[in-house]
Amino acid sequence: MGVKGIKKLANELPKWEEEIGKKETRKVILNMINFLGSVPKTPNRLLGIDEPDDITYMCSRDKFGRVLDEIGNEYDNLYFKRSSGLFKESGKEFTELCDIFIDYILNDKDIFERASQIITKIGRIEYEAYTLIKQGLKEL
Image (tube, rainbow, N blue to C red; front, side, top):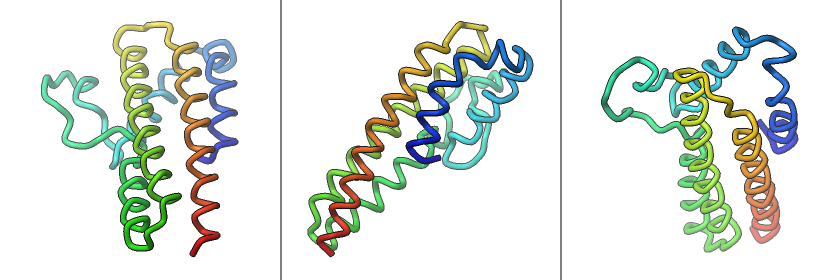
């Protein structure tokens, strides 16, 4: 999902229960949780397993960050290196989003305003990251 998609999600998420109903909203959020993982997998907390997950729920932003860091080092490109840090930061935000979504599934908490704020923050971080990549490409 690109920055425009992230912004759209942030705006529409708070309306889901009203527009598609609670049952469908829960299905969609559960699907989102699964695909935030480095491989599609339901987190242990949702399965009732009291053990840490063996995968990350960072929407692969940790992987993006590692690749950009390697490219930045290989080409001595500070733009890629800085972008790497931003993707790692957005990955942490995706992890927090996943935790909030899990609270919604398990505890029926009203998480929509907070989730929308996190998604908006991810959009800002990633816009900056993509801007840095664009600048970095000009230096190659």
